[in-house]
Amino acid sequence: MQKLAFLFLIVAIPRLALAQADHTAAEVNTEPCPNPKKLRSMCGMVGDWTKDPEPQGKYEYLYQRRFLEAACVDISKDSNDEIARKISQVWKENEDKLICNNTQFEVGNGNIIKFAVDKSFDTFIFDIIDWKVDLNKVDDTDGRTALDYVKYQMERAKGTSLERKLQFYYSSLRSAGAKHRSEL
Image 1 (cartoon, rainbow, N blue to C red):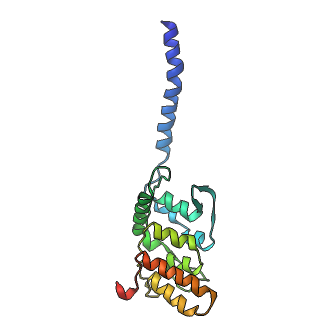
Image 2: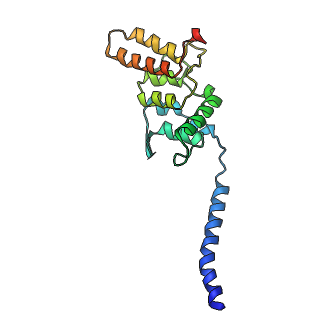
Image 3: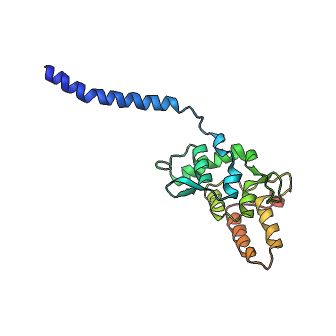
């Protein structure tokens, strides 16, 4: 009987310790979910194309990880549709904070989508399309949507190599539901 009790303790004690450790770890993680604080400095990450020092899965940029964290995405469990739903919701709730001011960006308090267009950051543009964020915010400072901004930039870049890239952005955003201000 003593041997049986001893064997039980050998098996049970480590399991109890692991359960206690898991419970304690859960208590320590008190960050809110969703967590808009993770969206801080987003313009810097987008403007510099900041790589993630610890990339996760297909996500190689730091802005991607911050959006995933802000939206409480679990890339090992959440489907692409669920990821899009979560990020789109966090975007919607924090759109007023996703504005950029940069001396190399002509739109003061401009939408981060316009900033990504200005920086030719293809990955960001395609991520926001995949994540189904609202593409139709009108900035107070220039009175344009992202699509209006791309069209304006296309007109300015007419005849240059940049024009083709901007046309691609325009058609990609348009296909994803982006509209001109006059269409809203």
